[in-house]
Image (cartoon, rainbow, N blue to C red):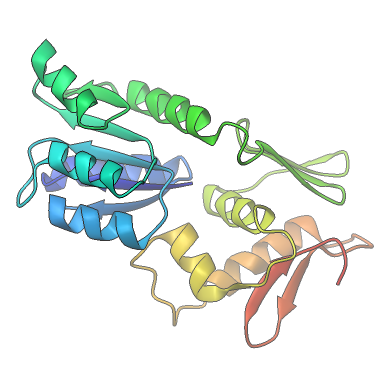
Length: 225
C-alpha cells in the first residue's frame, strides 16, 4: 500500500515516513503543494496525508485540484488549525478526514486503515489467493497450504503487489518503485534479493513453485509456469 505524505516540516515528515514504513507501507514525501500535485499525477497512491499550510500551493488548493482532476484517492488533512470553520473548509475542499496536530500516532494509523478500507470497497479483495497460497491484507497473515508464513514488512508488500497482479510480468523497476518508493535506485539488486527471500519461504520444498523469473524482464506469480 502506497502513501504520499505532504509535509514541509522535515522532522514531522521523517517521523511519519519512518513509522509508516515500519508498518509495511510504501511512503513518498513531498515538501510543497506543487510537488504534491506532480507526484499524485505521476504515481498511484492508496492515500494522501496532506498538511494544510504548505509552500507554493496551499493544501486545500491541492485537494481541490486533485478532485477536479478526477482523483478519488482518500485524503487526510494534517494541520494545527483546529477551529470548526477550519475543519469544514478542509473537508469542503475535498478531504475525507481531518486530523489536528499534535495527534496520537495510533490514531493516525487507525484513520489510515479506516479510510483505505472504505475506499477499497469491493474493487480489490482483502483476501488474495493463488493455488494454495493465501494473503490477508487486513490481518497481514500469509499461509501456504495450512502452514503460516512469517514475512517482514517489505516481503509482505512485495508479495502483496505480486498477488494483486497474478500472471502479470512485473519489471524490477515496477516492483522497486511500488515497494520501496519513488526514489528506488533501479540498478540495485534489492528486488532480486527480496524475491529470493520469498522463494525460500514460499516455494522451497513445494511441488508447485509460484514465483517465476521472466528472463530479461522481471518476475510474476502464477500457479503454472
